[in-house]
Image 1 (cartoon, one colour):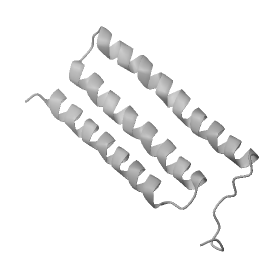
Image 2 (cartoon, rainbow, N blue to C red):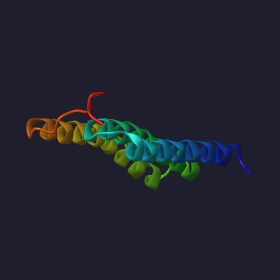
Image 3 (cartoon, rainbow, N blue to C red):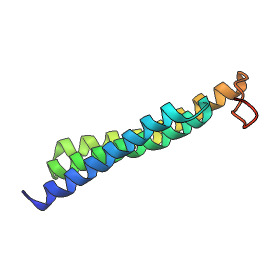
Amino acid sequence: MLMRDIIAIIMILIGCFFFLTSVIGLLRFPDMFTRMHATGKCDTLAVLMIMAGLIVHHGINLDSFKMLLILVFIYIANPTATHVLSRAAFRLGVQPWTKDKK
């Protein structure tokens, strides 16, 4: 196994870990805003790590360049979409969770 493959496997495993923590946050957090925060942050990091691992695995070629462009788009679009959805929910009257609510 090449060192490049080992690095790619480690990056992909780190991405899978971030996906796992995102799912746990989605299931465990009490309201929409905290769930959006967990999934927005962790999903972005997970996709970035997995795509970076695939880029390392494929080496320098046209496919890696295309994956890099997708990675940049996701890096910009995912946090923006999370922010827009949270802001729309707040404007529609969805109340954030407080300790008083049970």
